[in-house]
Length: 357
Picture 1 (spheres, helix red, strand yellow):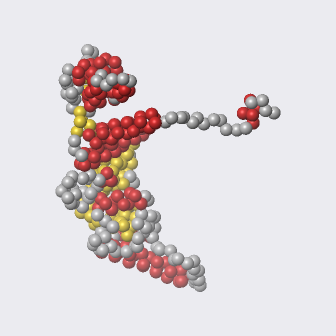
Picture 2 (cartoon, rainbow, N blue to C red):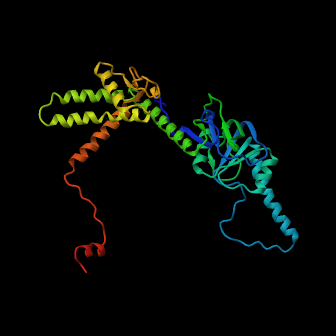
Picture 3 (spheres, one colour):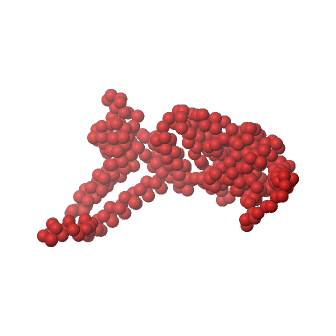
């Protein structure tokens, strides 16, 4: 950013999901990927200037309805010629400005497509206004609401625009050079054999991008894999032993509740929960504060399921936010003096049960 601090925009990382293939075939493209093919027969352009229209590329309709009276065939020919001439002037003006790629936010008429092909330009239709906006970010273009030649400030630029097939599906790639200052957007192309796997991968990427953004604001880290929760659990239960009266039971229960994180990790990894918690608690009691659950120990005979120094790290900001929300939720429940339960509505059956007619 301008202040010199690192900053990540979540919108700068996009995901394109394509069904089929293997997860290892997923890759990153510095630029934008449209999940549809080009409309023209020309399928590639390098060092291309780009114009983006927020409207369709077609003859504009009049605001008021009108009737054209034609008395003979010559009138019809002249009418069609004047429409073609106007469209050709618009497309020629775009081509003369140096544009190689036209992107339309609406439909493209056959007549417009004919002239786009004649002047050797590429054409792509994008129906979503959000995708159109992301393309503008990737290429530095400005979406126009009028059909005509763009100014140099309104045009975008892309190092390589081409169509390729991924998993039998045609896609259009707007690829920028790795050190290009034009593009502020990158696309992760995800491949998987099922839709559920693609959805899981997309959620994982979304979590990772947000974690990176949080790390730029607060870079403090804590041991993960349940190490922080187990250490806090031991400290809280040790504090409970110094408290007299009934308060110690509530404090001890709160400390024990923190064990749910390493317990869940062990359960999801297919490990013995009781054995892992016992080994993890013993490791922390002996002063090994970095000990955490080792999910790679699944299926290994004789493995304790505990790594003495875990390499997993969690964000400090995420931990504090989670603890704060958990404490607020528990306090809210404790403040409830009376629970009002909803009763079944209706009069007929209820009155009959009470001795009514």
